[in-house]
Length: 437
Image 1: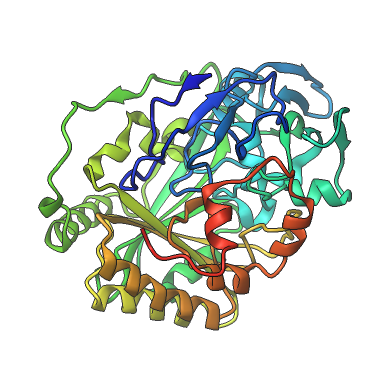
Image 2: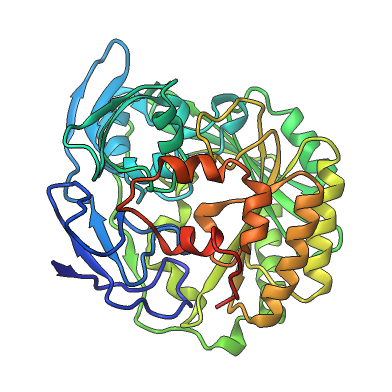
């Protein structure tokens, strides 16, 4: 056993877990360990979906080999501990890139499948799980490895299965051929959700789109970024090692509404100067700007932060997004980094996949307290009334009744869950009640 050195989730701010350990069992869950187990990659989920309080973590980050690649089809075979960073750095110089990448490159293949991550190109490409053509699953109740393919019930349960159906050992993923090693990026400003949607509608030639949103501004001003791969002979920038922050955490009083307003105003003005400007940037900068700082989560102080990410369906999306954000703003909930994206109608293969055709907003909320949780409970009700849902990979406070209403298929996942596996998140949201921590 290797004691877990980081006993908090990426969002920090939660009570340390108790007797939480890593075990490398040759990448296999087992009934011989008399405590609940949970596969874990690099632990970048913001909440408790990768936490197993009082249990055991089965680490996969040492099982990270890239095994085979077909230059004709783009099919990559790799161990589940291989990361998005490994794949991008290895294959971009050869003209290939992962088909879907989330907001951090520090995600394992197993983690990307377990949360069915989405990227800036969801409208055309869908979720990560759509590009997985096969996977090998190890379970505690089976002596043999299971070879799964799209269409299998257990495959569908494993994609967005939150790591609960077994430990993913190997993955076959179809990479995407790209035009070149750089991203051409255009920056535009907007005011209001309808204006954001208008920019999305006018960006069919740009597969990668995302917006930054000032949720404290009544007019909901924002910055829209759109990008596409472009050719650039002889140009390739290697992945840089993230810079480390000094070991200082800002005090809680500094991370309030006034400083968030100031930060948002300064950021918006800085981007206004680049309106309609096009420039070529490294994919590392375009897709993963925060990864340039190691442990950037410490910027939120010892009390940490939570991310509140919701999606509402396309019908009345602008109105419903505005209602949720207005509720949070009027209640004094501050966010330094809020991201808005549009999801397309490409169906997700996973049983509990988060994306649906509509609009999603993610807000980083520092130093949450009891009052913040009460406000977010009210926001949950608005999202639920609109037919939307919250993202389990980012959650640490959703109530059981909310989760069950948003994900009625949870019983199907429970029926296919490996009996040796569980997580703090799963125990919380499938309980009859769960007070906020």
